Image (cartoon, rainbow, N blue to C red; front, side, top):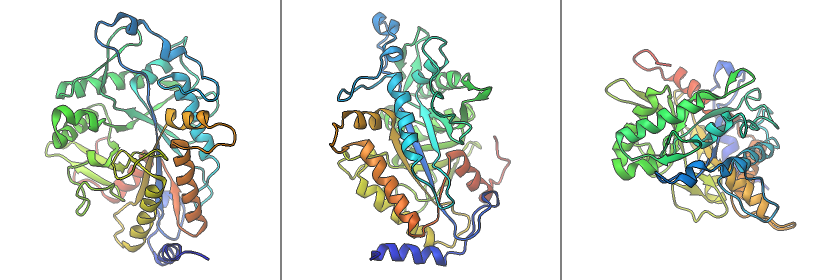
Length: 375
């Protein structure tokens, strides 16, 4: 028998009269959009003057280990983990039968390695992610390029440090092509707010990150929800992820579309933190999003559910699981939340998988700025 919450969600969606954007070519209830990020970790940083680290190509060359052996910070794992995540996602469909789309955001070491004629490439060997409608963007680790081989340093948590990291990251990402097409979508980023606030403070770190990213052409911040503070919708109070998209506008004309998330979904998460969700917490947040979408008649609001995976987290969870043993970490979390989304979709909830750029386009069309949008 269907549970009470299943029945409430289904009835609410049946009664909702909002329609999706014209480009979706759909009629009926307004969907909850689902946007999925894969955080591609990259390499560890070097200390300035560490000649051995600066000369190392370990990240670029270490192969995948056998089952039962963990490996982190390796290009091989970053590639294999992303492929594994996408392969898992292809087992699911939204309300119209479309497959999930992945927002892939590598760190700087990954972008530099991808470009290398000896160690790079490989990212599209199994899937043509661009042709399949996925989006690449920028992972804003607090790092800057050393100028030496594959070496990256930690960047200072200052205005100049943040500006430097975005310039360096965007420099390498901007050179990445596949089949004549730019790999980096160039619009969506994660700013590394939880790191930058250590030197800049909570509120000012967001200001500095947004301005530095904006200067490089980025317009969409997909960040831990507590890193989105300015112009946050009433009632959120920085306590949880906003269930709908909003925009931050600064007095100098800089603006940024805000997409909140609550970290990765993992069986190893202890819960009650902005950095991760237990599978139960993730499912409950998804259900709340369906409920508030169904009860809100405001056509300007674009409701969504966003969550995060990590290439290394998912790949290692699968690689460490012995035959017949259950998953315990991010692999478990990914399967649990996707199974829950499939359950709700089968029960009548209207779901649509999108990329951040697609989600922002819907929001911007419904909520135009009082001045010309700067692309």
